[in-house]
Image (tube, rainbow, N blue to C red; front, side, top):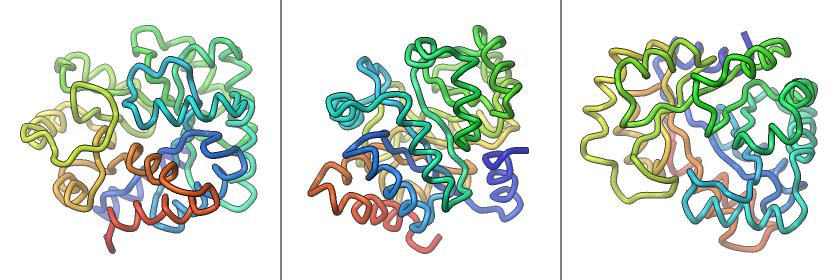
Length: 262
């Protein structure tokens, strides 16, 4: 049982909804990403998703697309993912999830990636465009290094596919709250809570809900229906909204506002 699995086991035991925080590696800098992650943990985040910047992030809205562009322009590579994770591990045992599209991992080599990720202290991997039907070999390579593989479930996923995602996901299932790209939203989809009730009848693994979660009200409404919320665009926008030196403070303020004593 790795750190991600332990986190969700403890959340269920405590009957508490956690928060998974996403950051883009290298935005605003490789060095700053480490400090941002540590400050997010202090603010109450239970898990950190370390996003690998990619030139064609089709699932991401403009905020995270811009962060990927800035990181790539400054020279961030997949090697920096491992460096950031290793620095976090020097002072923290917070669960770390590598969040990536498939192409950067294929270019690096999946077996080599698994070994490097495990060596850096990463616990699990979420590959946004890797469907479970094509994941068996990759999952074995990750499992051989003690890493979990997390899959996305969408509002359009039929019952049979949800069941397959549930069987194959390690640690938790990431449920995409909307049909579309990432990005903060003023209100939750009015049909979301009803969908989550139905999804819960199929998915037995812990469930994390993301895409658009950006306020305490969202967190409060979702808490009875999931094991964690995933917050990305709100954090990434805060990071970019001022001078780089203040990025950790601005990012952690987002998490504190959303949790507000939870």
